[in-house]
Amino acid sequence: MAVFTPLDEAEVDAWLSRFDLGTRTDLQGIASGIENTNYFLTTTRGQFVLTLFERLQPEQLPFYLGLMHHLAAHGVPVPDPMPDRARQTLHTLKGKPAALVTRLKGRSQLQPQAVHCAQVGHWLARMHLAARDYGGTLPNLRGLAWQRRIIPEILPYLTGDQRALISAELAHQTAVAESATYASLPRSAVHADLFRDNVLFEGETLSGIFDFYFAGVDTWLFDLAVALNDWCIHLETGAFDAPRRDALLQAYQAVRPLTEVEHSLLPDALRAAALRFWTSRLADYHLPRDAHLLTPHDPAHFERVLRQRLMPD
Ligand SMILES: Nc1ncnc2c1ncn2[C@@H]1O[C@H](COP(=O)(O)OP(=O)(O)OP(=O)(O)O)[C@@H](O)[C@H]1O
Ligand SMILES: N[C@@H](CCO)C(=O)O
Image (cartoon, rainbow, N blue to C red; front, side, top):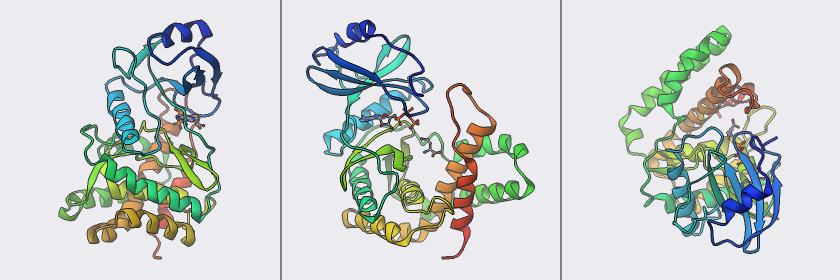
């Protein structure tokens, strides 16, 4: 369930009157999602999503909302945060930070085919190019610095084999991140969590990308690796499905060809992306921050993905 903070119609109406968005015609709690309280809010002027941020710090939110607006203004189909009459997009409702964003059309495609992966590759590259001149500077808060802090806390919960794997991978990624080639990788604000459940399709056409609340400045290659590791694998084994992987990569490169350095570092980036989500899932599982909010995803899945990425092709 994802209505952690129930809202009644009168309090939503009072809040909505700050905007030039007409009056409420419908309000429905959204059942999915595990981080925030979300409602679909329909007014006489359009369809929106009202989000109450249950966990995120208000200081981080201007970066996410600013990025969404920047991308929307560049023609990327992402939720556009609505300003109130005082031109603010970050609001407060029931004492929590809140935003009202445009509702995107479409449905998720949890069993993607190559045609869907090609759409994801195309829009990921468009997003990267559009984000180049976004001025926000929030780092990826689940990047290597966070992993180096949290992995020692997780180690006691792991088997000897898992401890060896995660420690060796962390050491490898630290060495990669300190290399001169890594420093030359193109980067900007990126989504950093472009999984199947954060994209909508109308038929075979991508109609929306949402959930920017893990976005941060990181390499474009890392963002690409996150998407490849989710959209283009067999979920049971973590192995790549070659037609889907090739479709995503080709469509990405039709918009923005990878540099030579990016080609050479892609295998490391795929490992880095697997390590990132194995680590966060282990942390959510063993060190829950807000146990009542989080339904942890299965950490073993990303352990399998990492082991697959370590095998020769
Ligand atoms: N702007 C939007 N337009 C259309 N649908 C949306 C939009 N934002 C959210 N949704 C719908 O609401 C659901 C819940 O949103 P979301 O996945 O972002 O939840 P969350 O709790 O904020 O994050 P998490 O994915 O981390 O659990 C999505 O699966 C999607 O169906
Ligand atoms: N995509 C993340 C959850 C955070 O949105 C995961 O699958 O672990």
